[in-house]
Amino acid sequence: MSIKSALVGPIKSPRRGLPTLARAVTIAASFLFTIVVGRALGAASAGLVLSCLTLTALAGMIGRRGTDLFALKHAAGITIGDRFPFAWLTIRTLQGTAVAAACFFVLTAVVMARTGRGDAVGMLIPLALSVPATGLAIFLSAVLRANARAAAGTFAEIGLTQIVAVPCVVLLATLGAATTTSLSWVYLGAALITLVYALLLTHTYRRDASEPYEAARFPGANAEMNHMASSSVLFYGLTWAPLVALWLVGTDADAGYFAATARITTVMNLIPTLQLTAALPTIAAWVKRGDVASASSLMRRLSMAALALCFPVAAMSAFYPEALMAIFGESFSPAASSLRVLGPLQATAIALGPVSAVMTVVGLERSATRSAMVCLLLASPLLVVAGQMYGAVGVSLVAGITQIVFAIIGSWFLWRQGITSSVLVPGWSKSAS
Image (cartoon, rainbow, N blue to C red; front, side):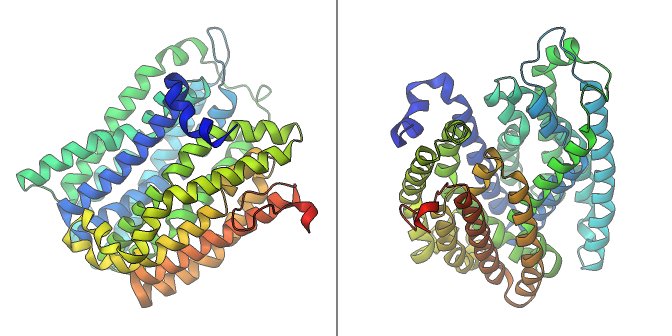
């Protein structure tokens, strides 16, 4: 598989490229959502809303307890007459996310009350209610993706929620009615629309294939789901722990600065993400049959292309961050310092290659999880200290370095398998040591 096929293949074959297009639209919707929230509320209030949304996503991930990942693995090829425990997994999802929503509401309300933000606790009600709705939609999206409906599943996962929310936020801002509480209710409404969409698309699967759970059919299912869920939580925490740290010990404005900065770096990751969506099955197949040389060559070329394509944004982040931050509104101008720090560090991590995703398909899932755990444990106290002392700039520095350290550790694990994805050390291979 060449770079050309990885990038142009989806264009020449629209049906095959639908999952890639859906992923791109979802990332764009997330970026646009952050922009409209920032412009509607300003940095401080936007920081509060985006921090709480990050916590709802974390609560939902914990509450689902791996049901979506279990479905993605075991629900493939469902047809009429197949036996799959939809009802049991649905109940497990709803029970877990309901408990997680309650915990989110209580714990977040306590923290906000103790940090002088008690007047905004009302926004937590719709956000807490969105946790079960979003959790069930994500579980159903996994069923769609497992059955070759990746594009529909991507929108059901969360993309449609933000696509629906964006025009509603714009309307509220136009009417002068945009507040943290009103935006939270908008998000709940968008989440419910997404859930209805997911339920409609999975109606046939749920009707024809649902059977009571049988432990003998899926031995160790609970342990498997809990392991997969813990891995997802760790990787999510590695990405968004900086924002949570600022929410806990910094100011809402600092949280808003970092949220905007992180969205810019998400744009830098757009090309690598789309490339990986197309190339990962090929890489996994080559490694499975022992052709690690071809897999390494493809990964290095993809990393080189990704670095070249993200270079304009990285250069602007380093030299003209004010221009990028202006997208979010005047109140975000202080975030330029954060972007000047995080942008080049993110580009360095991209140059090291998509180690996390590749590790999950070449038999290194546990190593990836342990690496994420170590990095998160080491980074967390540093994020708290940096957030207290230097705000968004300090957190951006720690976050960027953590991403690079994780990429280096992942590269080392891959190197032990004879695989390399780094463009910083061309031709690096196990034999070279």
